Every structure is written in C-alpha cells, then in structure tokens.
Length: 335
Image (cartoon, rainbow, N blue to C red; front, side, top):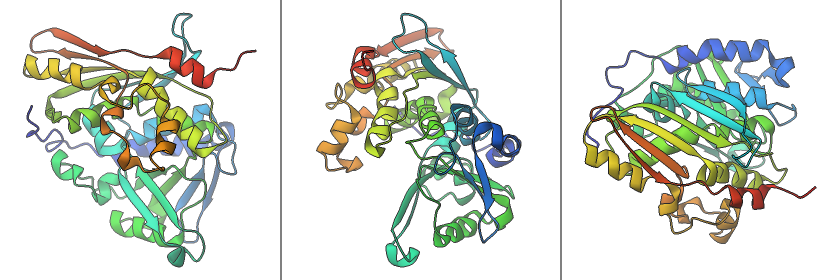
C-alpha cells in the first residue's frame, strides 16, 4: 500500500478558527459543565476540566469536538440490551484525516525538567488544533497542512497546570499572543478526561491506517463507537480503561476510495487482534513493560473491529471483533 497522497494540502480549512466558537460556548457554559476558568500570569486562558473542578461527561463530549477542530461530532447514547455496556460514545467526521490526525491526535510532546519548573518535572502530550499552528511533528509534512489562525486551543491530559516555561514555549511555537491561547486540562482520572480520550476511537483507526501505509488521501469518511467506562482514581487504571474501551470495544467504519485490494488488506490488518498483546488489559501490559509505551506492540493500538467500504467499487470488508466479556470482567462489579 502506498501513502504518497497529501490529503489536506489544498484544504482552506482552519481547525483553530472552526474550533473557536466551540471553545467560546464551552466557556460560556462553564458553570453548568463543572469547569473552572482562569487566566495565568501571561494572559493565556486555562480551563480546568477535572483537576480542582468536577468536570462532566457533557464537558468531555464538547472537548472531544474541540479536539477534532470543529470537523467532527461526538455524541452520547445508551447501549442496547445486547451491547454489553450501558453508555457509548459515537464519533463521526466527513474530514476524518484533518479532524483526527491534523488536530485530535495527541502528538505534541511537551516537557520541562524539575530545574526548569523550580519543582516537579512536567510532561504532557498536547492534542487539538494548536498542534497545526506549531507543526512540530513530521506528520504535518506528510499531511501537507499548516494552520495560520491568530487563535489556538490545546488539550492536555494532566493533573496540574503546565509551568510558565511550557506556556512560553506554546506561545512561541504557535506564534500567538497569550490572550489568544486556550489550554484545556483534562486528567484521565476525571469524567471529562475519560470521555475525551474514548472519543478518539476514530482517530486511533486513522493513526493505525497511517502506520500501515494506507493512502490517507483515500479515506473520505469515518465513524466509530466505543463504550464509555467510569473513570478510576488511579492514573494507570484510568488510562488502562480508556485504552481498553477502544482496543476491545471500539468499532470503526471507514469509507475509502481506490483499490479493492488495499481496502481489503486494511480491514484485515487494522484491528487490535493482530497484536501479540491482544487479550489482556492495557494497564496490565503497561505495568509489565515498566511503564514504557514504546515497549508495547504497536499493533495493539487499534479499535477492536473495523469495516472498510470502497465507494469506487461498492464493496465492504470487515475485520476483528469486540470482546465485551473482557471489558465486563475488567469494569463490572456484581451488585
């Protein structure tokens, strides 16, 4: 399979401008959504969605759409009696490559040493539209995309606010005035944090397709669904649950163009069951490798089940299967 296309090269869309009204509505409804808003010393807006603030699932749904640069929809629904879990997230986009890889993907590594912070070292992966202003990841060269908006929003999965040195770096790399930057903080142990991570079910499929070498320009529509677990107060367990929701409960439908053989191979190779680590909880695997993500088999990072439809031929292929029995063993306590 070839990955020579540049799916966003001719796009005039600005993920930061498209997300801006979503950000303003989020802030206008901060009290109802359980959020706290402040400006740091530089003037950047800091939105607490689950550190000191309670946050909410409703906030997580909106943050998920902000992360997708206003090019995706994230909805909550009740699971049917045969689905094995009561609450599910549905995600869809008609610009899946730009929404998921150009915006939502948590790909911007942000860190500071304890000497730089004057206290504890800091690390986070930034996700959301402001990534496309800084374009610090080689992925953007492959996408052929850069945003030039004068405002930006970034989501950080952290349990404390970023230090001044990190905020200064964000402003510098994004080329923004401090007043134009909004940072949304969503610890995975919170309702909003768990929700916005599970809302990446489609993005995980897009990232895996990219890793497999599928031509991203041939992916024209995407939809996904995944069960929404309760957050855990333990950070590793909380992260494990959000990953397991996608790896064992995630279902994605990709609509593509091009060659049938490439579409068929994508449906076969994409699901998480192709990994040697498949069948165990993510938290267990993570602990086993000494908390080193890079020691985990990359094939695991994929939804459980995938359909691939080729609109050029009208054919559809299916691969993988969910394992709701495993998720119930991990998440469900008997009354």
